[in-house]
Length: 217
Image 1: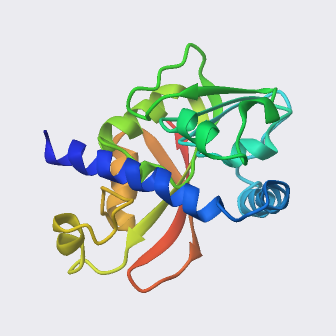
Image 2: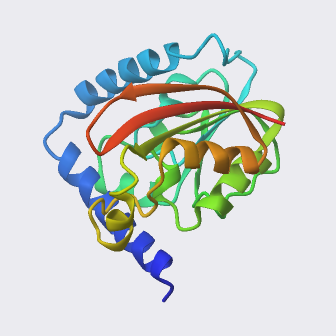
């Protein structure tokens, strides 16, 4: 088995386990109310660049069990994740029936194919979880209309000397890919995304949490 595929499979197993542990003792109603408020605050950071109209076609790629799709239920919203079936089985916090206006698809980023193109593409806390990151970014771009906005969040390395160690050992088991902000931005631009703004949401010693807002060329 290819090392990158093996590492992705391990990361997916730990991702499922992490959600079960994280939400295991959280009341679903209380958690989901908090999460909606979190997404509203998150979106307000860049809504001037990305106004999501009521008739917009919105994609939440790698949505997890409580993604940003939660606040775009009046739009034409599609949300997908490779673990959606597992989340619905494991967690009372996620049931497709809770969001009747959202179209859910069980798919990885690399394999996602949509008949329609989207006006706004969100990929939050997901791009460095994939098997093939370049393939995943290309699929995101393919899913977007020309001129569409893409919002991608990343955990980016602060220290180049640490990156080789994290690539060799499971220092960050949930994230198979280890890049700094400049490398992520260069990768996105190479795939046809013009960078409009980068926002540092949270600073840490090893990783900073950034949001990259871009436009499909």
